[in-house]
Length: 227
Length: 155
Image (tube, rainbow over all chains, first blue to last red; front, side, top):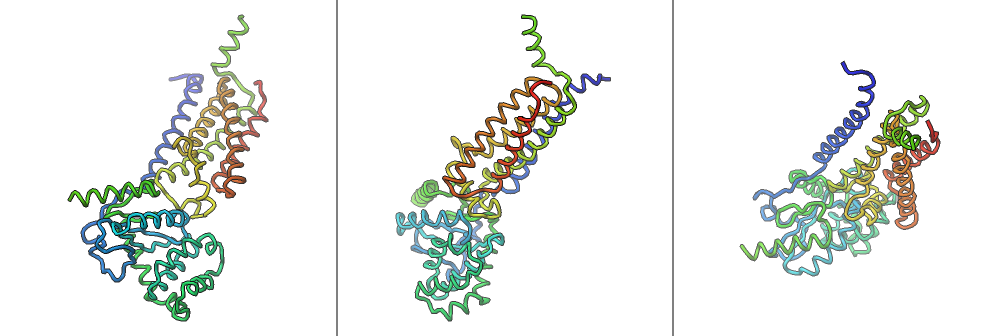
């Protein structure tokens, strides 16, 4: 039987070892729960297989590269990426088609209202104008308690029919559109925003910056040319 | 010379400490675990690319997504995890009477204290935004510093 002195000299090593093992185990478990593995859409899940009238797309339908974004208008990283994405759209011209899907998180107080505002503007053919405006003004409306009057003023700024906009924003049609996007995101395993798919292949969250996205688009273009 | 070699031997081996000092080191070790949990959580969030950190708070995102959140490509949170684990290790050994661990503990906590001051300056004056996890870590580091300063130098 080991003496108490021997136990005492081993004990700090045991305690430190146990804490190290626990930290690594819990960290790894948390990482596995949070990490979104790369996803490739099945044939039925691709944009080409979807009804095109329900899709908000910018760019040519024949573009060799399609970038599909799942975004939340109140999410700061989405707002930060909106500007670089617009630059990318301009630079790639007819080679790129961009699709936006609503994926509002409940933790963002006004995200769902913002998604409905964009969809209501979309019913008057101005989805993308409202999309750009909401991201540009994110810092302002995110902090306000009652966002509806502000969203209506945005609609006015875009020259929309305000009576129709106010009716549409609360309509079932708009809610269904937002939910439909969200269901698609859930089916694809979207956990964070922004989540981006380039030609039906998810982009790692660590590559959500202008340089990495351009590299991914270039790679998709090369692959299309090669095939 | 004999007294010098005796002091060197004392530093590398365990000696008996007063109960109060042992309690202080045990408390330091326990508090450092809270810091370790905080820093490990942020490290995992960073590595997993989670963007809804701090409940999606824009201020938090501004801090955790800033250029100051990484040093040579390594997340500051990961460096924090290593630092808190080091504090836990040194405090545990110090509580068991290892003299040299006390010196390492004091040096580590001092470096963490200076780093915390720098990151508070960055949040307040360069980013104009505060991250609640970073503030929690700062509070823990200040508490650790206070405890180490208050601990008697000699057993």
